[in-house]
Length: 345
Image (tube, rainbow, N blue to C red):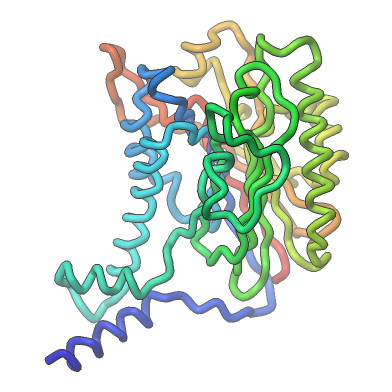
């Protein structure tokens, strides 16, 4: 009985563990960047962080991407709800992908998941701890009250995980370990390098021009870091996140120059990624501020060229939830941004 039970289990495990053999030819990779607005519930108890985390985990927009870059995962509880929700979805999909069994006993599901590689693969949150990273560099502080809020999830194996914390900050960002996460993923047998960041916010606590200077310093440090990694020129390098730099401005042009980066070849969808006119949370917090396009997925000019990079901002409403007697319909104060990159593998 034990032997016969192991055979179908092995067959299922083989069926659901993906093969990563390289195959030359055209390839596409979908990258989602999403500022999820999980501020500390101690300081900001009224934004339903855990409720929204579950709604995001159950949403359609978060599914079917190769890489997800999240920002503002400051509060551990909702962040873990979202992590677990994504992990549960992948577990369900993997088990149901077998046609050999219609229903599996719970103990067999557990065994199958143990045989499988984690899916999606995940980094820790930048600035939370040095544990779980292959290296930590930059200006990591063990006394910072807040982490950096950025993490990367991948449906492909992550072979390297590194974190870098920016040196300069102002306003509320001074209290956090903001920086970038850097991972190498094994995408169908080829190395793809992904950076995820959340840069200095404009803040009344910053002096005139200080926030922009902090961002410029961070971009320079980031570019130096990339150059220091000696990444082969024939490998794809992706940089994603909430840059807090408005599109079609002089600072955005400076961003592209400092990072030596290509912006998306096409922009689709909603014209803003943070919209005070249409987003209930953004409007509540900043009713008189103009809308902004500040979330991007870029590619490195020094490395593998891409055929196209189509970026789409998804203006979405969540199922209704009620906070303090007020109904809301937003997953976050930012809209999610998806970029589909086409390149030769």
